[in-house]
Length: 112
Image (cartoon, rainbow, N blue to C red; front, side, top):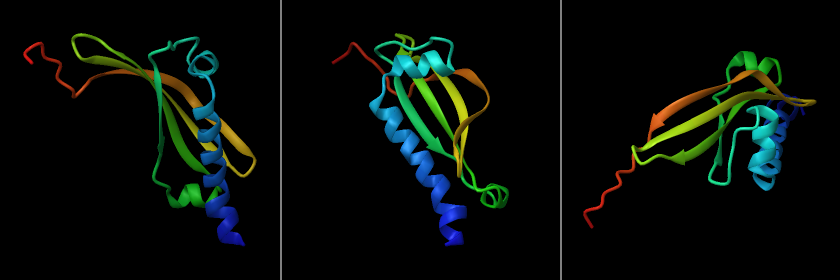
């Protein structure tokens, strides 16, 4: 029973948040967490962080949700990320969201 409470319940709440997020509109997520950023080409990525003993004792799972924008012709992509944690009572954002730019690994070429 304690294993379920400390380990599985927060993970189940995080996964439920992911299911809700995947079935929702990217615009609504962008409006709520990224000050209205997001368009029809954006997609969402979820990442569950490795749990520490501190997370286990606090009955929480840390995770992040990233909204990935379109890829520019120069192969750059804007990534907006918000960190969250899931506890026994629900999901809460952790800190402020942040933006980073990454170079996309795909190489676009006109030489086919």
